[in-house]
Image (cartoon, rainbow, N blue to C red; front, side):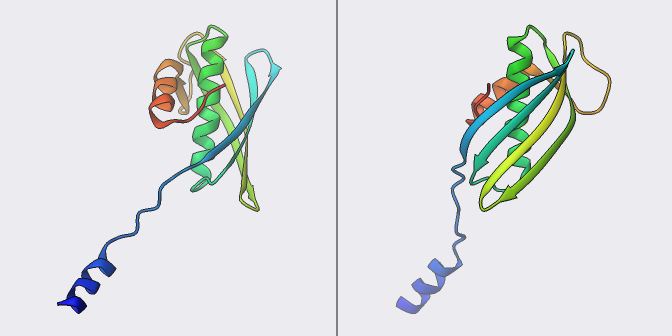
Length: 120
């Protein structure tokens, strides 16, 4: 019986808890409606966590500036020694911009809040 119990506990999946450490956002207005977001975090699972962090910053920034939308131009992600950095550029606008990578700022900020991802 004891051997059977050991087999059962060994088969149970190990669940890792995601506990990212968001270390801040730097925002730079590049030109007109073009904005650069530099984000830093630790314990990201992969590059998508860094991209999500930058998107949350962009969405909140758009709302702060009185805009309802943003469009991702590019996001570069690097990881070195467990420190993840994202360098993202977005345009912000009052109307839905053309393109495939557009975001509705209010919806994204709410989603970020629900996921525990900080915004600007």
